[in-house]
Length: 134
Image (cartoon, rainbow, N blue to C red; front, side):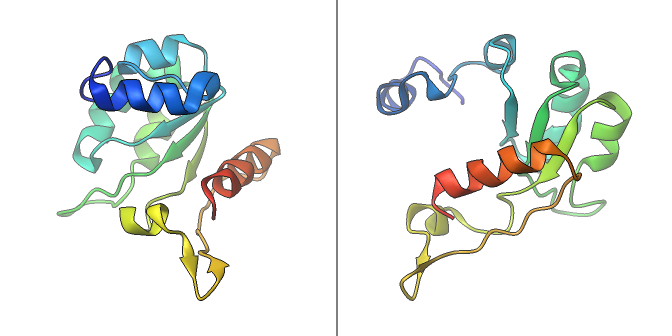
């Protein structure tokens, strides 16, 4: 979030309560989250991963970014290099914002494709996807 103290952030904080941490990357990671949703531009992913590797390692991470303009579309190799203990999933990167605002098609919820390792973390990711309305 560009301004964790701005009006938009305060509205989110009021609406969501203690379900999420809103702040700088360091503040969010220092709150010891179980799940980290990496929602940064694809071109910023590698620097963000390497810069916060110690705080990201060992967590469930959702890579939501698509790196456009050449090279791999995802940052999985960077995660593997810098956060070998993380359980990394690719999710929330196949639908546009308007689909999240209204996730229904012909009376049913939209499907969201995701991939990641087999483990207990998969249940956590599936619940997050369900909680979003997909």
